[in-house]
Length: 212
Image (cartoon, rainbow, N blue to C red; front, top):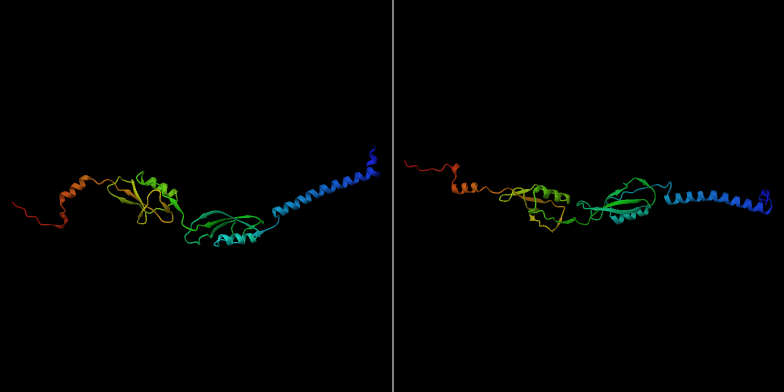
């Protein structure tokens, strides 16, 4: 068939219809793609992130949902001064402009002081080792106490306030611990000297009768 037949008659009509369809497809596909891409990515849309710090996690979720944002709790800590279940921090911060559907990460306050199983640190190591273990678990420590008659720096006990803490107990981390260590063995010669004095007050200047 001669080439001119594609441009005239039945063949010519079919040719031009195909050309027009191809042009429409070439133009339509990128246009539809860009439109859908802009719709799904919220191109040009900006939403100001509200402040939800201090609100309950349920109120924060509702507030963010109304703005087209998504709340996700990623961490929980304990702060005695804050209300249980309240939001302590958020990311992104309030005032940032984001696209719809953006995830806002929340840190919430626990409903009670966290507790942890107390490790076995008594009688197994030095003060330095006990301090390292307890601090790595998040405990706060007060100045340590010493007791005489035990090997120097050996951990002989741990107290929380006036109560002694034992290995395996569930202990809260919001109260500080006090490590009790040995102050060194008592010198036996010192004990003998004290006994030989018999409790006499040398500095008191007691009178003695001396016979010549």
